[in-house]
Image (cartoon, rainbow, N blue to C red; front, side, top):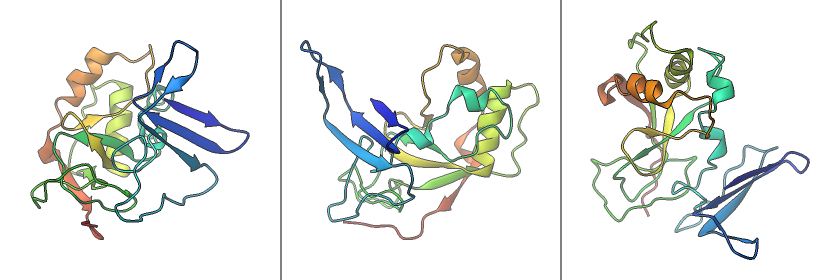
Length: 188
């Protein structure tokens, strides 16, 4: 669950949250982020987590329809994505890991990748897909949690054409990306 308090300038995020019969909510964890600051959560060992495994806020990395519908250039921030296996490490601004595997062949939380400049975005793709791919070329995306490989996280919206989006994004392969941020890897 994600709640934005615009008046207080706070972002509240809870993971695995479910409504209870009495009207309250239960969650496995949560975090509060200050919207008026770029400060990240403390990196105390063993590291702070949040509603996502990397300790990052979820909301800023979501693909949102209102931005994507503007077409290329409409999304002006990095995106978040998941991979099925990560290593016991993180790259700032991430502050946490979610694996016991120490293999250097696996990505750490917070690893940033970018769509290669040489990738030609097909003109026949939808405006939303072209916006997403333009953002991936410009800002990239960060490993934020364990999940499906190369899975972008988006805000639910009935206006998405999910079938077309999945089909078009499915044509972009891992080889079309490059790692752009790996310095400062923290291995607890």
